Amino acid sequence: AALGINPYQNKNNYGIVTDIIAAIIVVPVIETFVFQYCSHLILRKINLIKKQQNFRIVYLIISTILFCLSHYYSIAYILAMIFPGLILAYFFNFFYLQMNYKNAIYFTVLIHLLTNTIAVIDEHFLNNLL
Image (cartoon, rainbow, N blue to C red):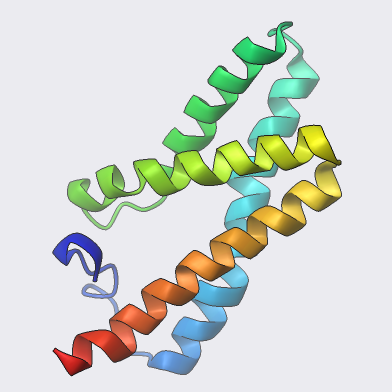
């Protein structure tokens, strides 16, 4: 696993089918909805931040913190999730500004799905080769 951190270490061994369904399909949808879409929508609705640049910075920070804290396998793992959380929030905001919420959700889920696919392949296949 990345950085020698294994998020599966404290879980029962449910196998690759469950990991594929959860990590590759379900989790990206739920996390995008909660950490990117909901935090973006709530910040837009409360409308305290008028300038787009300031909104983007506050949104990136809040979304990334929430994303990181949801990955509480260990302090190291939480810290390791800063960059992925920041990337997902950045792209969500980018797609929202270029298109709309529907496409922002769709493309952010796709990015998240791809990164989780790499993590599952690493966990179940590449680690067994070494």
